[in-house]
Image (cartoon, rainbow, N blue to C red; front, side, top):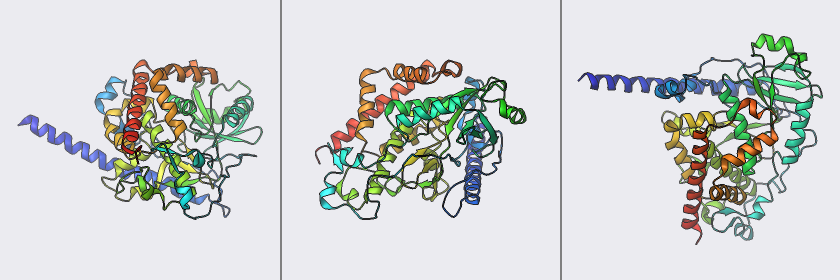
Length: 426
């Protein structure tokens, strides 16, 4: 009888925590959207404004690390944030998609060329989408960011522990100072996994080691002291992108839908811009599944228990350019932390993945190759070390987490085969 009472009390406690998590996360989301709204100009540009750190330990952080895992992994808690403004002048970069962005539906001839080989977005459609942050752009940005002095740090990239940095050439970057190294490591390794997969929706990123005597950080010595950042800590800097807006989950990917399938009847009423955005969403879903990032679509799916309209509001940590290119931001929940709390979120990850049976061919091909070679850890580590001089300072995935990543590659490969078997004959 005593055991039954204890179990009931534990269940009541978990339910209470879940309700508090939901209310708190909605307040965070509303506050972020309110702050964004205060700084929207008539031209639609977003400008950084003051950001308040609501708590050093949010309820989202407390709930994502079960007690047993907190003990196992040393009791560290991550303070995860919702989507935030990101802005940097893009100079000559052009986000214009190579299509006439009218609302017209596909013509009959075009419809037949939307899907190839049963389950893949067609090459014709893929060619219409602008490459987001190209390899050339990312390489050039990283070189400039490593060579430029930081002349100003201010609020504008979410919680107060993150800062908006202005370089001596006038460009900007979001500086992430993690509550612990897991957050910076997750953000960084997620970026390089995207590079390995050929997904170009993530802003370029570099690492930097705080040193107020160095040329890069000397001009903001006083500000760093006020932030109480630890000397020699490794931080990440990501390109700050202008004129971004929120993104609502497309109807085919909401809970009330049957999912996104390569069926003519489901795609015939879509415009080309709508199809291009759906294509990017399929990349996002595969990517978030591999990294076990629960702080985007999966968190919305979880919140449906209390909020039936959550999918009709902006998705966490996802923004878009005026031309419809999606930008995946704030990926710190991926890989390291996402894998530690995988047991709690896996059923939601599987549900989201199961909603999609159409894929970008080049993304699927890279997944298939990583499955065949079974060397995801080796390839990711080599790319990371070759691209990032501070890789040894920040560290890499543990053997356990590298095994989880390869396992998820293998499961994604099986899902692609399942979809091909189901739809290739249509």
